[in-house]
Image (cartoon, rainbow, N blue to C red; front, side, top):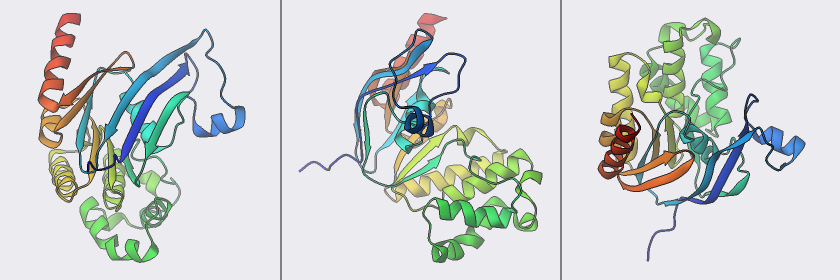
Length: 247
C-alpha cells in the first residue's frame, strides 16, 4: 500500500494587492476573504501536488513566481484564497529565518523563547542548548542583546535553533545562500544529516548545485502556475530552456 502523503496541495490559489502588504492569517481572520479587486493578481493559481514522507523537493523559478509564498502557505503563516494545503506532520520553517526573534532579549533568552514557541520542550532545549550554541559559534555572545549581533550572527543563531527542531518536515527558503563559506558547509552538512534521517525537505533556492545536491524531485513555478514536476535534473533542464527562450 502506498504511503499517505505528508503534504497535499489541491487547486491552490492566492492573490495579492499591488502596492499593499500581502494577506496574512491575521488579516484573513479580521477581515475575511474578499473577492479579487482590479488591483489584485494571482501569485499562485491551480497548484496541485502530493509530497510523500522523506521526499526531497526543490522549487525553482524566477523571482516573483510564488516560490516563497508556497512555502509560507505550507508553513501555515498564510491562508489560501482558493483550494487547500493539508500538512499531516509538524513543520520546521527555515523561512524569513530571523523572524520571531526579539531584539531586546539576549541571545540566550531568544534561544529558549524561539525553541519553545516552535514546540520544543524545556527538557529538549536544555539537552540541545550547548549543541545549538556550538553550531552557531556564539558562546561569547549569549548575554548580548540580539539586536547588537551582526546580520550573519543572527542567521547563525536562527539556523542553529530551527534546524534542531524534531519536526518531520523541513522548509528551507534561500537560507543556504547566506553566511560565509565555513557556515555554509556546516549548513550543508546539517541538511544532509536531516534528510538522511528521513526528514521531508522542501527547498527554495537559486543555487543549481544546492538543488542537485539535496533534492531528487523538482517543482518549477512560472507566473504562479506549476509547469513542471518531476526528477530534479529534468525540472532544471526545463527551467533553463524556458529561461533561455525568454532572454
